[in-house]
Length: 329
Ligand code: SF4
Image 1: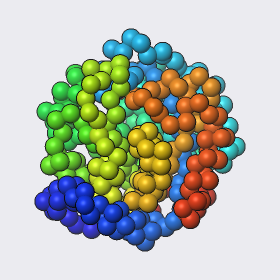
Image 2 (image 1 turned 180 degrees about the horizontal axis):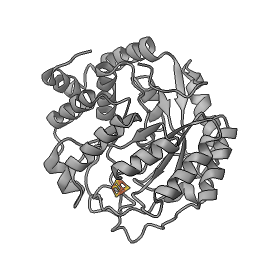
Image 3 (image 1 turned 135 degrees about the vertical axis):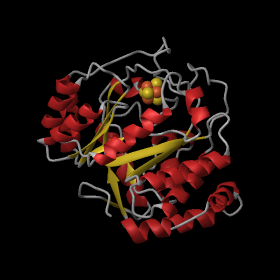
Image 4 (image 1 turned 180 degrees about the vertical axis):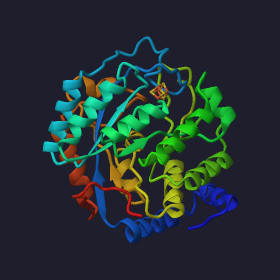
């Protein structure tokens, strides 16, 4: 569906009729991607990051963050257990931790690929050669949020990082044949509604296969601790409009939405989302990947987290995806 920037702005601002927007996005979701909800097993394998994004709880400058790095065997074993729980996609996420160099990452990808799963990487900015090597090793998808298309805001919030470089990474990822995932944060300080509308048009223009949209939630150990943060409703409206603009892509009900309301994920599934990414980390590692506070399910075991998510999905008459859940074009 085609919407102008002004039409998107009007929808983003319209709190009164937001349920109509959610219903429309839900209908489009059913028509284009069906009732299946695809579950992705999320392994957060290192919370060490060379960057210092102001909004992020695992930023380099947060001396209070307890850091961890999983060994190769731990990552592979966590993936194996997730596959045994029935996940058909493994998402490997970390800060920008260069300890995982090309050969280490490729060994992990090749080992996990033997479990017959789709692999998504979410490990930040890398070189062309690295992206190429990871793809050759078996990675199918790459997730890298642009966070905002307001370049001035981006450079303010992500010191020493280049928006242009991140954009070029997205183009490279696409060119190499990955399914491309990107997305934005809603409710960043100084972010305008106009800017969110531009973000949505940007994601449409670059042709993402997956769009993750989540509220900004201030972390107490960051320079943005005292900021207001994004609301669930504006995040949901943004996500619903994304569904209208790109009807057949994958859209996760993000964990950050669940952190703002106990049924945030369900609300998202009823407003255009068709993917959920439960955390499959074990033990201590579950709590330590704290991008923002009050993350959902940091205290429970992966099997319990998964079955709770499945029950919620079934309770709204949706089904659990049985395949890899790739973008149906
Ligand atoms: S947002 Fe990503 S790149 Fe920025 S500090 Fe956090 S983990 Fe690192």
